[in-house]
Image (cartoon, rainbow, N blue to C red; front, side, top):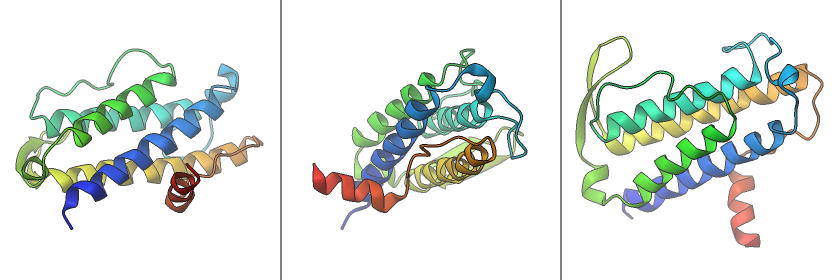
Length: 163
């Protein structure tokens, strides 16, 4: 098996999971989205926007485009998270196996130079989002929110079977 179908599946999952959180949290008022909660980032909105900004940074690295804007954009609208994930998904789905296996040189946000294979960069980017969605779950529980989206990979895979 080639890596392309697996990476496609992972970015499809990432879009599905990010969309579930955005759609759920868009139902909350700004006061809840911006309320401080002890975590890596100070609020639900800040955590989602960090996912967006990181995905944008990895897109720039994958496409070998510098400088990397941080934040990805001025808007703090939750819908921007899904827009950036769609861009990542489109890039990956439109790519070739050869592109995915290509090495890319890039600088991290501190200016340190690295070289990495693109499919590994995509794997990291998607896993990074998974880590922060787990934090969103804890933050939502801390804030007393309900209807927390199930976002396990197996839930996504089962949803594909149901069509």
